Length: 464
Image 1: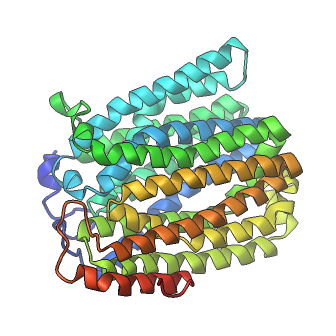
Image 2: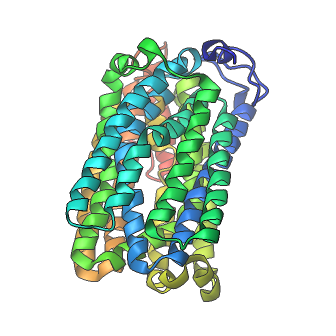
């Protein structure tokens, strides 16, 4: 096996192009579009994998158990996303030089953090076991598998940072295929229960995570420490606060809705959010691609807006299609997709359509700020957005169960979108570029002009 540090500097065996040095454009606009397409394919595969498991759960489990499975999945997303993805994945995305030259050090920090994240799940599962909760064993299993599940996710972001998204496609395709095989095999020999569903989903993800070591090598010695994370701590701790705030929305919101309205309301909200998946998948993909390209190419303000506009244009088109489909889908198709949960979802279709349009209106803005390493403002907006969403969720659920919770979350989302655009325009007007680069000549003179361009895109007009 080739040394990963050398492999990162050699022509890519998967993408067919040599790595572009940080600060240069890899293939120009055409290369950016190809990478965006590849990242979109990867996100689609990842979403199909998760969607397949959720649809399987909706059909195989009672609605209450489907709500419990949703809580297990949310716990994984909250713990893994708040710790490993925030501290490692997003940090390496904006430090592509680390992905190129020392990916094993990145993976080593991820493994150590993931052990701690798994311990959180183990502790939660142990406490629930004291009360004979059906959630205890699934959470214990997720805790045990957390290190490899996290490595699988970090491996994807290392691939994005290296401008080699096809490596991520391999990882997610492997998880998808293994999940299909596992769940099909379980269905042949055993009834699908909550625990077996978690085995089929998390167990195969852990197996797919092993392939990351095949791509980059196994961390050893000083690489299996938090040394890399300590070097990037100035960025990563702020990323932790920002990302954990977003995860808190999903986890705390679901928990409070369950307390206020019961598990069926959680099931309705989670099932409804599945119908946003086509739009959110594309939005995540184009934002990820834009953020990685901005961090790698370090464009001026005009170039940054080119990446952001490209991401937003794709997102708006897909959101409009998603909005139309939500009103055209017949009941028989909805029942085929979500089973008995479909009747809980139908009152939420209008809200879902408005949510996907609102999310598309901010597409690429957060990624542009992350690509510029503006983690401080990102952290603030994420925290404020978290507070708005939780308040909307809880008040809405108290007033109108699942439908009220979704309306409340929509109000919080719209206010957050306005906040993102305000922060981006302020950044463009400031004349700042990248924290480790001195401002280039002419930056201050062109900042107001590019800020006005951003304002035009946002539909707010020039900033005075």
